[in-house]
Length: 198
Image 1 (cartoon, one colour):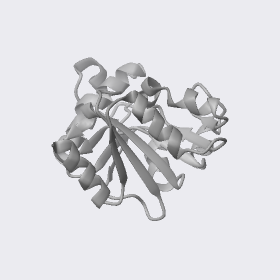
Image 2: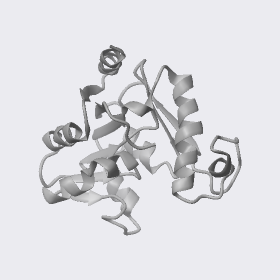
Image 3: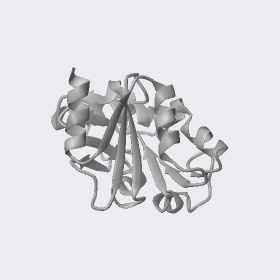
């Protein structure tokens, strides 16, 4: 029942939210939304990796600006100016807000002021009750796991929780709480009934 309320709350805020049961349905939703040959930017989303989004779109002739597909110095600029941007989120609140914490902030920058078409894919493991719980999840679950994945020299990599550090390798410089899509932006939110990513 809470899933219906989550979708309702997201839609009431201006997001285009849908619920799908699994990764296959998520891929179909993305495939239906994005036209062949479009340019598509990505951050470092493990959810997208698990779903295989980049490979699927590349097979359809899309120009992919994401790690492993486009490694030139202007990767971030190309992703920021693509036709579409695809990301996940660190947390999504039952009240309808979407939360992300970034180090470089290329992802949150692209989501709020980059491509006019954005898709955010979120597994059920990232659903939280409210903003406070969402920020807690981002800081104490997602950030330590990503720091370990990226082999960053941070206290959270060791302790598994945020230590409010000032490490030069920290990956949580900026926090984005999306209450609504930015003016002029279309944000599709795909909530998946499986656990995906961090």
